[in-house]
Image (cartoon, rainbow, N blue to C red):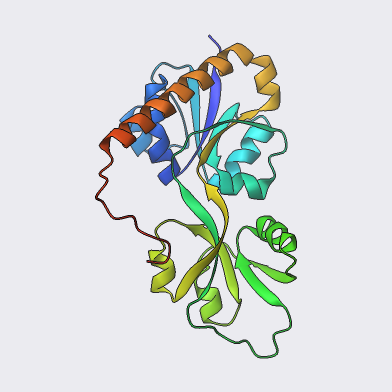
Length: 231
């Protein structure tokens, strides 16, 4: 039996990926999931699970500490994706990577260049270079919404789900950099050495994504209002 090591992002991605894993035959015991363990085996023993911070998942996979992983497209865009295959969009944990600015413009004294606060430093640099806007990027690891309020930055780049957090902090989303969802990533060497096992798993996960989306579509209530960004 070929054993595969799977790296999963903590939090929302883990929770929304678990049903897909179950449909693909990867059963995780509740006792393991609810424990503080960061490494445990699936019920069948064929899979070793690593539970990591999202930003660490592509690093573990790229360097071969895990054969495959699940991580948001936003993290992959920042990481660059070297040493990785990205065979499948799992279509869970969806959101948008956005530029946001104060609803009421805040003028910084002696401002010569636009400041952007974000944890997506490389993504922000590429995006603003692409639109011909010179910027100074300030890397933050959280509480991005505070940056414009205290004069640290003019705009932020961050993931947005409903937009309520932006609104609560006096911000509005302006430009969409990318639509984000969770992706399956695979180590390139593992794909060669464990090709048959990995391909079979990818096929099962692809079927699970199709099934999951069919269930969501069938359960969709057309009359439900769609919440817009910034509302």
